[in-house]
Image (tube, rainbow over all chains, first blue to last red; front, side, top):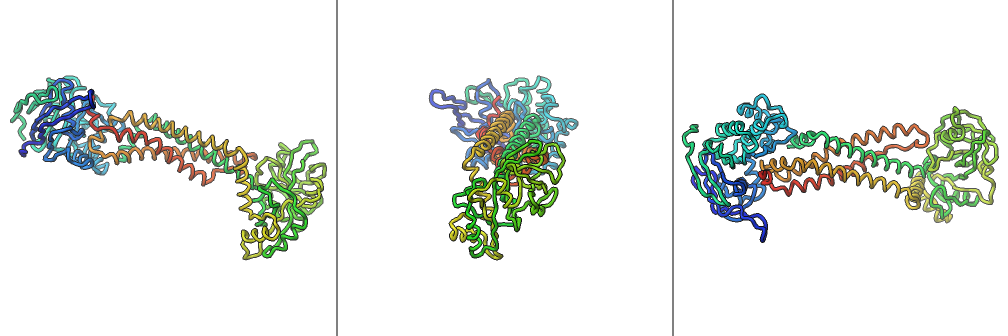
Length: 238
Length: 379
């Protein structure tokens, strides 16, 4: 694997169900995701985008093929090591934010640090600092229900970035947002998340955000049908 | 992550308070019912416990509990005195004459006839008067609850007259005798007087009370008495337990209390389990997100158990406080005197509550453990 490649999938297959009810969600996916780039996985509903993202993130085990994430064959890691690998190296942004309703914005953003054993005060302070850089300095103590959708997604982004992951996976991050807010979130994602030592994968079917991509992998019926790259190469000088 | 677990728990105020109320209710019911149960059973041996100057009770070989007496022969007293190791032995009479006031108020009483010479077994806790006055003609000591029963609403006063089976008796003292199993007045008098109250029969001796010589083991002496006289001899503690076990085996009391205790446990597990389950299901996406982020199943199990034990500890504390308050109030009432929250019941209830909350959280834990973190990515 090239050192520029953060994620490499070869012949990735995934089936759901048994017998006559069997569904082939991935039919031999080949994909390379580069460091320092935002790669969009796009395609119609049910084409396997989220399944592929879940396999890459180690949330689902595939039925065949190889997936190498940050130099590790993630599917070969024993259960606990796979979880620890995820905790250390991956950040997640979900479509519905999935913030803990009882925690403030800063506390939510601090969860990965707390999970890693960092003392609460230190973790929350770090989260507050990060939220301030994401334009949320005034709302760090607000509960999720007191925040707008865009603000909640910013907290989710802070939660995904706070522990310095080398791979950020985002599942439909703008699907629950209006066009303007979605664009703002993507601008933030492009500005704050993409780093030379980090790869960003975004699953989306929102064509309004395609302009933020460094590469777009189009999927259909469980396969990658095309990859367009270098859309924004050079725009993001570090 | 303990902080996250506790914030999640307290964040949903309605369910949090519901869980605490359920556990507090369950605790109150368990502690209350088991303490009353234990207190009532303890009453079956109250008169045995009140006699502190003798350690050994000798009775007919077939006697199983205090109320059940078959009169011994007067010569049995001498036989017991003849057993090696007996320091002294005296007679005790137990009968149930009807006590009647001059106003016509009456009640079946619980009359203990004490050895005339020594007054062994006289009530030591006196509220008014003196047990030494039992040596006077027609003298009786009555317990406070009995006095209130016979003279309702009247102040405690000595030298009042009552009739015991139509025999005149003068109240020379009011005692604080332990509550008997049945709410009868407890009357102490001399043996010779008591047998007159009840009516003479061929044999009258209910029990022989004895004390071992210094250095002689009471249990061992009981064995010797049994071997040499053919009578039954028990230490005070053994005899009290005989009474408790008799009532446990031969009455419906354990079943009645057992049903209430079982209902408290079932309601506790069902309501707490359901609330906990709803709480978990409503947070399933969040738990999925936590799992995706890299929190292990073991840690999540620890988080849920921490939530359950926190609710259990708070609910248990509130329930115990309410139960203690209940007994503090009822302790002042004569019919419920002596019924207290025993530490053994509190500990037992604590263990039951731990069982309840862990059982209640098991279904929730299972639901979270089988949750695929990938679920969080599905819509």
